[in-house]
Amino acid sequence: MCRVHLIFDRYAPNSTKGASRSNRAGTNASHKHSLTLHTPLPAQNVVLTVTYNKVQLITLITKYFVDHVEDNTNELITAEHPIPISITNGQVRTQTNLRNTHEEADVIIVNQLVYLAARGASNITVVSDDTDVFVLLLYFYCKEKLTCEVFMQSPIVSRRTVDIKATATKHSNIAEFLPGVHALSGCDTTSFLYGIGKATALKVLNSSKTLKLLGKQDVPMEDVVTEATLFMATCYVSRCCKNMSDTP
Image (cartoon, one colour):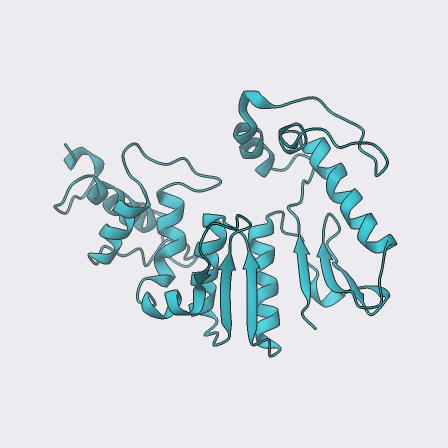
């Protein structure tokens, strides 16, 4: 029997992540609604552009699964509480060994994948089409030296499934630098620079302009900034630059 892990983002009050989520919603944000299992849900954009509505929806979904347990159910739900809820063979329990306080579902997904792989899971499918998840999967597949089959499947049927194991194996030489490159070229919490996309950043990375210091806690910040500046400056021109002033 396969085991399903359902993982949600978390929405902590006064979180620094809240600002970027609000910006993402932009001017399309709607009003707060009182959601229940017995009333029709508002339109998707109405729910997903207001944190208050999203938190209610997550709570409703979690409660529904807990209240409608079936004997053949085998799933783990990670919602607003730090400790996930395990539903197995009609029994509802908390799974304290997977306690996690991180807000981002992206991070929790990879955390649980590594946990499952360490306990012998041979085939894991992650249902997501988020670039952050893709980068984290490649990075941690190599970092943790995983060997199991891992696939990233989009919730949109027409999109192809990515073989994470094959991709990580093919690009293992740059996997450790991907989070840094992804952050510098624009991700959930950082803005992208004009004219620089993922393809350009990867081209520079493959040309040996690595980011060995980004993310290290035991090196001077000045060295990290110098390295990151050199990398981004080189993204704008084919020759090596020392700073942004050297770019056209």
